[in-house]
Figure 1 (spheres, rainbow over the protein chains, first blue to last red):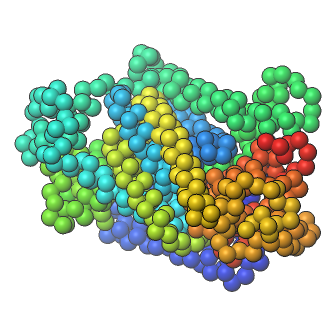
Figure 2 (figure 1 turned 180 degrees about the vertical axis):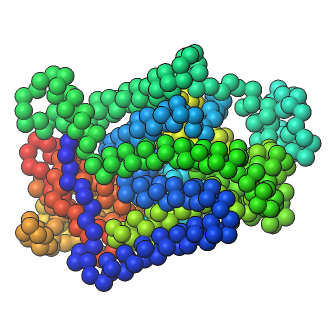
Length: 484
Length: 123
């Protein structure tokens, strides 16, 4: 159990195939260099877009190298008892939280805490079921798209368009809304064009979510010192200690028995247990390295975006777009979605929302699009640049390692991808994010709501695994009856 | 059927033959050999071809395969799913199997494993 030789071999012999892949990887890189250079030459303010682009590219390389996937973490644990990916994600959580704390202390953090409520668990649950059905989480589906998986691309598309349908639910969904939400939404006095009391999602946001309290652990514990709030409250209490507790639980539940069975030296109590824990953490070098780099990169991303905001004198990319003369698609506050850190689902929803608008559907009468996020042209959506370049970075890394393969799914796998993507889209909007925005970026910045989403996602993953196992057995039984 | 073709395959419950029918797609299932450097010539007892399948499906059915193999059987798992290529070697010890090698194939990767002899084989 402890050490497994799992290095994935590259194509044998190298030769022209390998050379072609290296050239293709360089071409992918060249495309993004060209986009970055050309836009910067046209207007230096595109540096803000390029920052998102290159961090996206780095995320893509990192995720592909480590096969980093939240679906894999939960699924492998429950389905086949392999903790490799769950361990890698906890490593990334610890590292990201430390870098985030440093960024916060230096006043460079762009993170805003989410309201704390039951909605995170429900959203996580639905998202977790969906990601097990599709075989990839939101970020996992993006990097697998870069590896050439058409099924993963279907997941991304399904997830994106479903989000628009959820946030723009019409009057028919008002029957699902408690009166208290409607009253609370009406009391907010939002502009009439947002129709805040019409449609389930608008009232869910304005009448329920906005009434919940949002805080970080550092703030909740009342630290006077910003350093203590960031490093002790946000990082240690909200991220590192829970991550260590999860690692110990995974060790005790999934790793310890096998490790002790293969132990060649006498058992030495706590020393042996610690060695076992370390063996688990380092069992997959590739995953551990990827987790480490991902954590540091995600922290640096916040630093860079905040520094650029200060340098450009803006708080939101919408101001930049307006100054550059691109006002189409801005929200009523002249803003667009611009978190300043690693995020996946909202920009994908914006892309799908733009398509809906081109088809004549007004999606900006919703709070989600109309009030803050806007529906900018995808070519001028800085955060969407990050998602696209994430796919590119994953493709470049896959090509360099001879792991790129264009794979078309069977009809059955395509249906699972689309159906699971629908659940992920619904879960992402209820939970206000995905495995990255509502979990990874959240828990690492001291926001306890991320753990609620993670709890729901884990429960959803467990249900998804049980359902999928049942489905396989049922299929086997059906085949067996035909056989007889 | 797989049970008839493979030499050291345990007399199985009906489920296994169905797994084989479902998941081994046109590959030669009978005993055959591969020359796997530096392990020498191996006789393959059980083959699972999961090319095109998702990781969860690949991992779950591989788990069933590993559980149902006879002691000392050599198992060959073909997949083009990178996540499974990474995960399967980690699954092997808890199913009484050892990882022999992972090699690149025309369509993806092939993971070779051997079921161990002795008490660890009985589950």
